[in-house]
Length: 195
Ligand SMILES: [Fe+2]
Image (tube, rainbow, N blue to C red; front, side, top):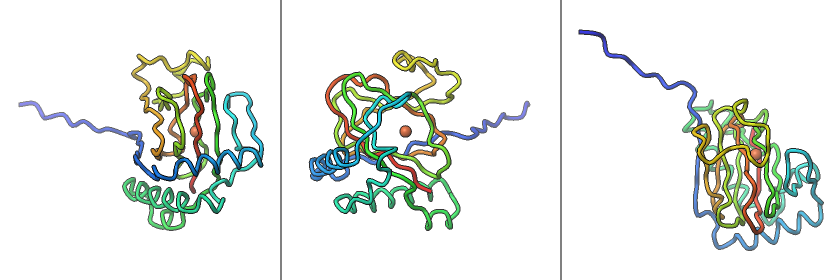
């Protein structure tokens, strides 16, 4: 009899998803983010076809009105890191490197990207129109460098999640992700990196 084969799955990709967070406070968070955007200003350039405070204010979770959101995200990030079996020293010392808010409209998009050197990257959806999606990809070199037609919906190289208000997504910083052309309406998110 021939030996049984063993299937090893190497380096799988992970998305940690928490739904229905702070549903009764999303309207307040929206007001706060719009205040921050007005005060700090935004930049829209190149592959970032959204209004982002990234280069103007990258510490938005330090706003006192977001203190509970900040501590809750960090708590879930630590859970995620424990499930990923990160070293406990990294977990207990984990904190936000940056956090910024993005406001986007119909037709806006983010070219697939990664988040550089950090342990965990993530996004929290505060407001999103129906049909707005974030896509995660297996391998960026396979993606056509064409913003709006990149990421065909039939691609088996990518996985889409609907951007649902109150949902927190956490992932490793090297997981490629992006948003195709937004269908309609306003979308407001807070993105962050944790190290
Ligand atoms: Fe991102």
